[in-house]
Image (tube, rainbow, N blue to C red):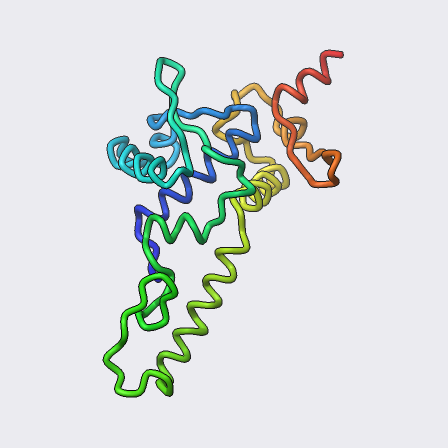
Length: 188
Protein backbone atom coordinates (compact mmCIF):
# COMPACT_ATOMS: atom_id res chain seq x y z
CA UNK A 1 0.00 0.00 0.00
CA UNK A 2 1.26 3.43 -0.91
CA UNK A 3 -0.66 6.46 0.29
CA UNK A 4 -1.06 8.96 -2.54
CA UNK A 5 -1.18 12.72 -2.03
CA UNK A 6 -4.96 12.51 -2.51
CA UNK A 7 -5.20 9.97 0.31
CA UNK A 8 -2.87 11.94 2.58
CA UNK A 9 -4.79 15.18 2.03
CA UNK A 10 -8.13 13.42 2.57
CA UNK A 11 -6.96 12.11 5.94
CA UNK A 12 -5.50 15.48 6.94
CA UNK A 13 -8.76 17.21 5.96
CA UNK A 14 -10.79 14.79 8.08
CA UNK A 15 -8.46 15.36 11.04
CA UNK A 16 -8.80 19.14 10.58
CA UNK A 17 -12.61 18.83 10.48
CA UNK A 18 -12.50 16.75 13.65
CA UNK A 19 -10.26 19.22 15.48
CA UNK A 20 -12.44 22.14 14.41
CA UNK A 21 -15.56 20.29 15.53
CA UNK A 22 -14.05 19.62 18.97
CA UNK A 23 -13.17 23.31 19.24
CA UNK A 24 -16.73 24.40 18.49
CA UNK A 25 -16.54 24.89 14.71
CA UNK A 26 -18.47 22.02 13.12
CA UNK A 27 -18.41 23.54 9.60
CA UNK A 28 -15.29 24.64 7.72
CA UNK A 29 -14.97 26.14 4.29
CA UNK A 30 -12.73 24.50 1.69
CA UNK A 31 -10.80 27.74 1.18
CA UNK A 32 -9.92 27.84 4.91
CA UNK A 33 -8.68 24.25 4.88
CA UNK A 34 -6.81 24.79 1.61
CA UNK A 35 -5.02 27.80 3.09
CA UNK A 36 -4.08 25.88 6.26
CA UNK A 37 -2.81 22.85 4.32
CA UNK A 38 -1.32 25.00 1.51
CA UNK A 39 -3.28 23.15 -1.19
CA UNK A 40 -5.07 24.30 -4.33
CA UNK A 41 -8.76 24.86 -3.54
CA UNK A 42 -9.88 22.93 -6.66
CA UNK A 43 -7.87 19.85 -5.63
CA UNK A 44 -9.30 19.92 -2.11
CA UNK A 45 -12.82 20.34 -3.52
CA UNK A 46 -12.31 17.15 -5.58
CA UNK A 47 -11.15 15.32 -2.46
CA UNK A 48 -14.18 16.54 -0.49
CA UNK A 49 -16.49 15.45 -3.31
CA UNK A 50 -15.00 11.96 -3.03
CA UNK A 51 -15.27 11.98 0.79
CA UNK A 52 -18.90 13.08 0.43
CA UNK A 53 -19.61 10.11 -1.87
CA UNK A 54 -18.16 7.86 0.82
CA UNK A 55 -20.44 9.50 3.39
CA UNK A 56 -17.53 10.67 5.54
CA UNK A 57 -18.42 14.37 5.14
CA UNK A 58 -21.51 16.38 4.27
CA UNK A 59 -21.82 19.81 2.76
CA UNK A 60 -23.87 22.83 3.76
CA UNK A 61 -24.72 25.50 1.20
CA UNK A 62 -24.77 29.21 1.72
CA UNK A 63 -22.57 32.03 2.91
CA UNK A 64 -21.75 30.24 6.16
CA UNK A 65 -21.69 26.83 4.49
CA UNK A 66 -18.88 24.40 4.05
CA UNK A 67 -18.08 20.84 5.03
CA UNK A 68 -18.62 18.94 8.26
CA UNK A 69 -18.31 15.35 9.37
CA UNK A 70 -21.23 13.20 8.24
CA UNK A 71 -21.05 10.80 11.18
CA UNK A 72 -19.55 10.68 14.65
CA UNK A 73 -15.76 10.61 14.75
CA UNK A 74 -15.88 7.32 16.63
CA UNK A 75 -17.46 5.69 13.56
CA UNK A 76 -14.81 6.86 11.06
CA UNK A 77 -11.98 4.31 10.92
CA UNK A 78 -8.80 5.20 9.08
CA UNK A 79 -8.75 1.83 7.32
CA UNK A 80 -12.16 2.41 5.76
CA UNK A 81 -11.22 5.92 4.57
CA UNK A 82 -7.99 4.70 2.99
CA UNK A 83 -9.74 1.75 1.32
CA UNK A 84 -12.37 4.13 -0.08
CA UNK A 85 -9.86 6.70 -1.38
CA UNK A 86 -6.95 4.44 -2.36
CA UNK A 87 -8.37 0.95 -2.80
CA UNK A 88 -7.11 -2.24 -1.14
CA UNK A 89 -4.48 -2.12 1.60
CA UNK A 90 -2.65 -5.19 0.28
CA UNK A 91 0.82 -4.59 -1.21
CA UNK A 92 0.14 -7.30 -3.83
CA UNK A 93 -3.21 -8.41 -5.23
CA UNK A 94 -2.95 -12.09 -4.29
CA UNK A 95 -3.23 -11.21 -0.57
CA UNK A 96 -6.07 -8.68 -0.91
CA UNK A 97 -9.34 -9.42 0.87
CA UNK A 98 -11.33 -6.99 -1.29
CA UNK A 99 -9.58 -7.16 -4.69
CA UNK A 100 -7.97 -10.60 -4.86
CA UNK A 101 -6.33 -11.57 -8.15
CA UNK A 102 -4.38 -14.80 -8.51
CA UNK A 103 -0.68 -14.05 -8.88
CA UNK A 104 1.70 -15.50 -11.45
CA UNK A 105 3.40 -17.73 -8.88
CA UNK A 106 3.03 -21.42 -9.88
CA UNK A 107 2.38 -22.51 -6.25
CA UNK A 108 0.46 -19.74 -4.52
CA UNK A 109 -0.15 -21.79 -1.35
CA UNK A 110 3.58 -22.25 -0.70
CA UNK A 111 4.83 -18.92 -2.05
CA UNK A 112 7.16 -17.25 0.47
CA UNK A 113 6.57 -13.79 -0.98
CA UNK A 114 2.81 -14.21 -0.68
CA UNK A 115 3.15 -15.33 2.97
CA UNK A 116 5.31 -12.29 3.77
CA UNK A 117 2.98 -9.86 2.00
CA UNK A 118 -0.02 -11.41 3.76
CA UNK A 119 1.62 -10.62 7.11
CA UNK A 120 2.35 -7.07 5.90
CA UNK A 121 -1.25 -6.61 4.76
CA UNK A 122 -2.63 -7.96 8.06
CA UNK A 123 -0.35 -5.70 10.13
CA UNK A 124 -1.35 -2.61 8.14
CA UNK A 125 -5.06 -3.47 8.34
CA UNK A 126 -4.87 -4.19 12.08
CA UNK A 127 -3.40 -0.75 12.81
CA UNK A 128 -5.53 1.28 10.40
CA UNK A 129 -8.77 -0.48 11.39
CA UNK A 130 -8.05 0.05 15.09
CA UNK A 131 -7.78 3.86 14.98
CA UNK A 132 -10.80 6.10 14.64
CA UNK A 133 -10.84 9.76 13.75
CA UNK A 134 -11.77 10.47 17.39
CA UNK A 135 -8.56 8.74 18.55
CA UNK A 136 -6.33 10.78 16.24
CA UNK A 137 -8.11 14.07 17.00
CA UNK A 138 -7.72 13.45 20.74
CA UNK A 139 -4.01 12.64 20.35
CA UNK A 140 -3.48 15.73 18.18
CA UNK A 141 -5.30 18.05 20.59
CA UNK A 142 -3.37 16.60 23.53
CA UNK A 143 -0.09 17.27 21.74
CA UNK A 144 -1.18 20.82 20.79
CA UNK A 145 -2.03 21.46 24.44
CA UNK A 146 1.22 19.93 25.70
CA UNK A 147 3.30 22.00 23.27
CA UNK A 148 1.15 25.12 23.82
CA UNK A 149 0.47 25.46 20.09
CA UNK A 150 -2.55 27.46 18.95
CA UNK A 151 -4.95 25.70 16.62
CA UNK A 152 -5.69 27.60 13.39
CA UNK A 153 -9.40 27.02 14.08
CA UNK A 154 -9.40 29.26 17.16
CA UNK A 155 -9.47 33.07 17.20
CA UNK A 156 -5.96 34.42 17.98
CA UNK A 157 -7.14 35.98 21.26
CA UNK A 158 -8.26 32.62 22.67
CA UNK A 159 -5.97 31.14 25.30
CA UNK A 160 -5.22 27.53 24.45
CA UNK A 161 -5.18 25.74 27.80
CA UNK A 162 -8.79 26.43 28.85
CA UNK A 163 -10.12 25.49 25.43
CA UNK A 164 -8.42 22.12 25.34
CA UNK A 165 -9.09 21.08 28.93
CA UNK A 166 -10.22 17.46 28.83
CA UNK A 167 -13.41 16.54 30.61
CA UNK A 168 -14.92 13.19 31.50
CA UNK A 169 -18.38 12.54 30.09
CA UNK A 170 -20.95 10.45 32.01
CA UNK A 171 -19.73 7.22 30.39
CA UNK A 172 -16.19 7.80 31.64
CA UNK A 173 -14.81 8.61 28.17
CA UNK A 174 -12.46 11.55 27.72
CA UNK A 175 -13.77 14.36 25.61
CA UNK A 176 -12.40 17.81 24.95
CA UNK A 177 -14.59 20.74 25.84
CA UNK A 178 -15.58 23.22 23.17
CA UNK A 179 -15.06 26.97 23.28
CA UNK A 180 -18.69 27.55 24.30
CA UNK A 181 -18.44 25.18 27.26
CA UNK A 182 -15.26 26.80 28.56
CA UNK A 183 -16.25 30.43 27.93
CA UNK A 184 -19.74 29.84 29.41
CA UNK A 185 -18.21 28.42 32.57
CA UNK A 186 -15.83 31.39 32.95
CA UNK A 187 -18.70 33.91 32.68
CA UNK A 188 -20.64 32.40 35.58
